[in-house]
Image (cartoon, rainbow, N blue to C red; front, side, top):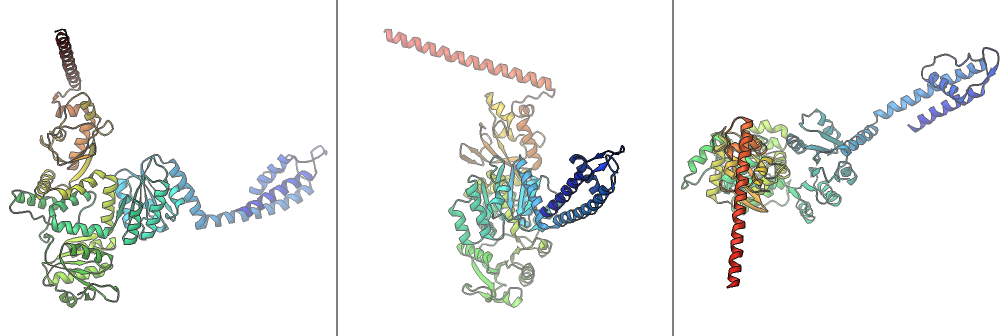
Length: 613
């Protein structure tokens, strides 16, 4: 815009200056000249509208000749300027510059907790929805303008600020608010390129070392590099799925609990029947509860631990699966085209796995499980359908690469489905928004089989077919002011009293998974345990129960109903009851102090008498 603006300024300056030099004649015949202000005023409305009349007096012919020149010159200069402006507005660079400035101003004004997401693919979209559903503001960075343009069309429950930019550049991260230590809760790097995610992690730790950094990585070298400078969370969806598959083999009950706790936002595709130890009394109860809560259909069955497994596809996913199954001493057969991979294991079958003869060579009739793990969804579906036709007793696992093909996978009915993006978003969402759940999941494998089955049965029976959810209560003035106030008055509140709910049975429909107290963890604590200030309590139950429990922690009158048994329904009587209880408590405290002073005086007198003797 420099040339058009300079041209416009020069035209106006010359027109104004010359008008002040040309003499005119007033109505009395006296000569006069325009002042600079009069000339500029006339040129201004002449150039834009051409027509308010000759001021302050009618012009002479000399003045009119010059005005004619100015009219055409100013019109041409305006057309040139407006045309240049329209051309500039249509340029992508200019629009990006304006959008970038608006984005920077919005982030500077942002005064709420937010997360930065680098990469807005399927995983980024799922994670953004999960975070906004929890009330967090999200800042999205992506190199693809088409993905960013789709954000305003999405129905998010919290503000989402977006910018098309290269998020591997530190300046972009700074503009996204990475240095706003008070409000920025964390950054998540979800680029399909591991090295780009590495750049984001390095820049984050350099600019804000204490910021929670979550990165996606699949390459072993990049993962080792990320670990070297203590990246907080490294997500490998293939590794996660392999661990869950092995966990379902070895500890199906614990895996079912983990699936409940992690996947609270979406409906699960994989439903694995939990087979209990027949020697335990809880078997029938837990199995019935499993069927109610998971709505398990007759086609599902337990993950077989022994027998042959066929893995179709020997990329990164296939290699990780084979390593985990080998560690469990499970027999595996690899199906892969020799032209695609050079370092195939001994005994592999050359082919795609979509043909019946290839599967027969791999021993499909004797196999107990099959994993369709190629990068092509059409091939994976063909493998699943062909394998089921040859051996309908197979436990099948399908890898979903594109979210658009989810409906097709549902129709193929694999026993487990690797939803790569869903798995990552669930794991990340749990880690960054529910750290107490993440801590409990680390301790879950350490529980004995009996305690795990007991916990499973307890959750299933309490939720009665509803989706179990978890919630945290901190015993402090912010999270639980009513409980804190009651404890500070020297009243005792037990976990059992906290979980009491007269609306859903005196025991309520929730259980305690864990209490963290001064860094110490109490897993599945006894309900008679006394709550203390600064405790962190992790509860599990129904959604309605979570609302009631949280309401109770903020409502002193409701808490008194359950804890202090103040059963008055009239608020005034509740208040009088509280005052009476406070008086009794104060009197007892005074009496105790008086007794203590008397004991001290008696002790002093005794010491004096002894000394005199």
